[in-house]
Length: 141
Image (tube, rainbow, N blue to C red; front, side, top):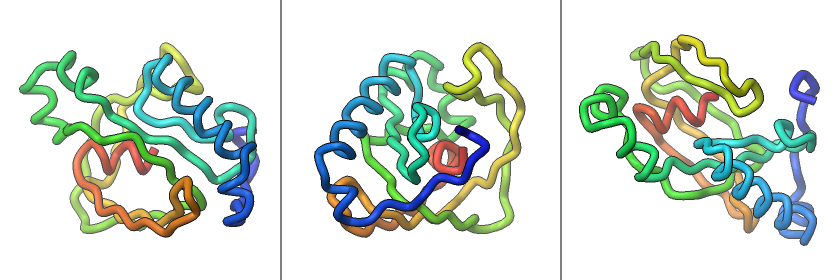
């Protein structure tokens, strides 16, 4: 499923009960893992849909100096549907990161330090996000 293109959702599909239930289940799955993001293809659904959240408790566990080095701040729960991403600027950084699809494995990945994402939220409303630091890394992943 992860190697197949995911399809965009229509506004009617976004607000229907099936999609809203999937969003709730994905939030629970992400939190149970624990993780900071989860895409629908990771749970076997070929849709352009992801849930994102970087909880304060995750950041507290890593310590203040590591959080500062990674430019990591809490990110409230939100949903991105049909996202498009653009890299902002030339600055990048390498850090270890993992993936819920490959539990127990980490690797060093270079990612842009700033991005802009345009998407729809869980109410099929347009959203634009300008993110930097670790939040930008989460969105790129």
